[in-house]
Image (cartoon, rainbow, N blue to C red):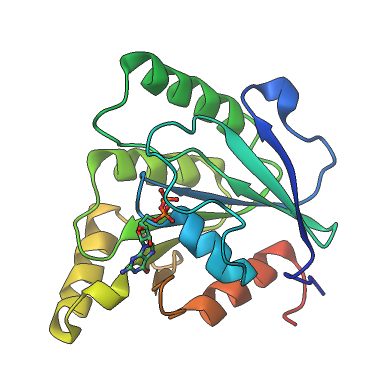
Amino acid sequence: MLNLHLVEFVRSAVKTADFPNDNLPQIAFAGKSNVGKSSVLNCVLQRKNFARVGQKPGKTVHINYFRVDGKAHFVDLPGYGYAQVAESEKERWDKLMEAYFAEPEPIALGVMIVDARHAPTKLDCVMADLFRSTGRPFLVVANKLDKLKAREIEPNLACIRETLRLGEQTPLLPFSAEKGTGREALVRAIFKDCGLPFS
Ligand code: GDP
C-alpha cells in the first residue's frame, strides 16, 4: 500500500549530484507552465498547496522531489514554454531535463499534463518524445476539463492523442484538478506502475 497522505518534501535539484539515489520508484510529472501541474499534484495528494500553485511561471528550473510514504518519489519536473523566459533559463531547462532523462531506470511512470482546451504545443511534443525515449510507461492528463463544453471533449481528446502521437498503450485521462475529475483513474495508474496495490 502507498499512503498518499504521508508525503514529505525531499529537495529541489538543479544538477545530477542533487538527484536522490535511493532507488525508489519515481512518478515524474511534467507540463508547460500554468497548465496546472501543481494543482494536479495537490489534487492527487489531497492537499491544498503542497506543490505551490500559481508560482511565477518560468522561475522554477529545478526538480522538486516529494517522498510518498517512504516508498516512492513524486517528481515535479520544471514547467516549460513560458514565453517571457530568458534564453539562459531555457538552456538551464534543456540541461536539467537532459540530465534527468539520462537515467530513466527509476522512472516508474511519466505523467504528462496538457491543457484539455488546446492542441499540444511543439514543446509538449518534445516532452512526449522524452517520455517515450525512456521506454517506461507514461500517460497524459488532459487538465482543465471543466473549462470545456461537453461537445468539445471528444474532438479535443482526439486532437491531443493525434498531435502527441500517442499509441494505444498510452492512456489519456480527462482531468480537472479544480473539480477532482479523473483523480481516481490517475491514482489507480500511479499505483499500478509503482507495483503497489491500490488503497
Ligand atoms: P503550474 O504552473 O502548471 O504548476 O500550474 P498551477 O497549478 O499553478 O495552475 C495554474 C492556474 O490554473 C491556477 O490559477 C490554477 O488555479 C488553474 N488551474 C489548475 N488546474 C485547473 C483546472 O483543472 N481547472 C481550472 N479551471 N483551473 C485550473
